[in-house]
Image 1 (cartoon, helix red, strand yellow):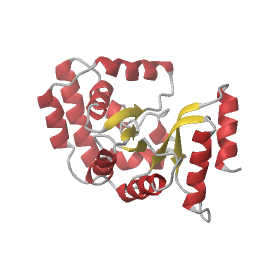
Image 2 (tube, one colour):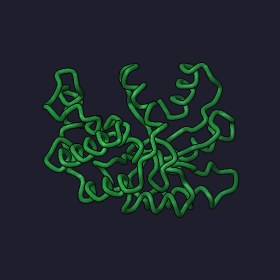
Image 3 (cartoon, rainbow, N blue to C red):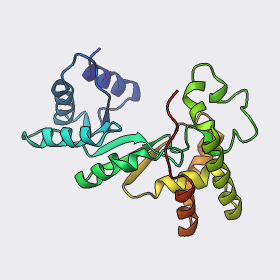
Image 4 (cartoon, rainbow, N blue to C red):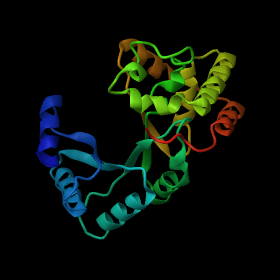
Length: 225
């Protein structure tokens, strides 16, 4: 199924005739990137999406794509880029965030809670019903359960306790207010988790707390397993 067919399937499932933002995730092997970008053009020109975006960790890809699209009239110009960004993973600051800022793209932070680790749920071990305990999702979470991750989680928990809020709220507010971040994409699995995420909207971290969390989380993120 081509990506345009997938878009139409999504629209039918959602019961709508358009998306506000359609993000191109990755690139299929053997498919010229120009062909994938033409699907974005067709989707926007037909009104099936109002805006388009990219999902990547590389600033050069964003720069190349924007330049390519701007070189031709009536092309869909990306307005957003989606990437993983949290107190546990800040490598986007080295390349992607500066590129997005220079090109005028908003950044959508994926996994802003460090794949759930920054909620503090793993401070006492791995709960049986958690993602880390899952054979499928365990390898996705475990890289953040190392010594560095534990130190950052404890710093977030300490800051949250001092402010009278949950660690989730402190971690999410930190990412939301970072320069260039337009939105955070969270993966709440339950109504209770969603309520916790929404509660962070009213939180504003004091500048000294935000700076302290930035200092303690500086450094290299763990390698993917």
